[in-house]
Amino acid sequence: MGIPEEKIVYIPNGIDPAFLEQEPESPDALRARHGLERKFVVAYIGTHGMSHGLDILLDAARVQEGDPGIHFPFSGDGAERERLVARTR
Image: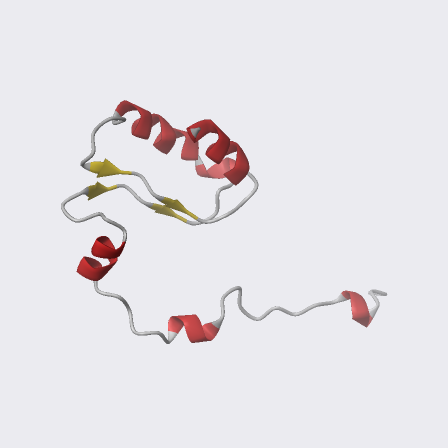
């Protein structure tokens, strides 16, 4: 195809395989570490992109604002992340 070999990069996996070999943390320990004991958690873990509709989750969080028993943690990155973070402020 005429593409120079030095412009080609092969990435076999987007995550370090050693991460997947770790002993998983128990759900109770994870909740304790993040102060989420006896809380209802609505979590999003993944890409923060335009097609993921995350504004709907932020709208739901706004409706529940002030209820200390409900938490909406987001984890991930993407094209919309900065805008979503700014919106929560």
